[in-house]
Figure (cartoon, rainbow, N blue to C red):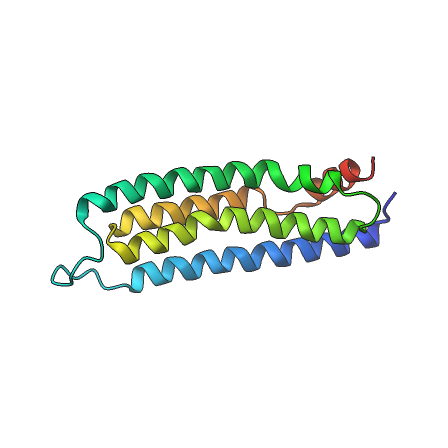
Length: 150
């Protein structure tokens, strides 16, 4: 079993990593706000193609979110004793946050190709929401540690 000091260290590390990913999502929102919304600029993509790309990116974002909820723990449960609890905890947090960050990246890409600001911000808000829902807490760390120590 893991002692309290080690659990607190893992919790601080997981929170730090998750907070960094959350800050990067905020940076993406600033980028979208900072992009000029000028009508006289030439579009990179045909307007009809933008709607198709919104749908495609939306499906890819949905897949990334589902994987972010399911994949990290399943992969790390399959790792044997060759990894430490600390390595598994950090890897789980990084993988989950990276998968949750993908919708924000898609939102920025959509804003670059001509999607409206509300659409791009919607992707970013969903990304940040998923990160906040799964933000590391003591209960989640204890549950994770119990699951991987079986």
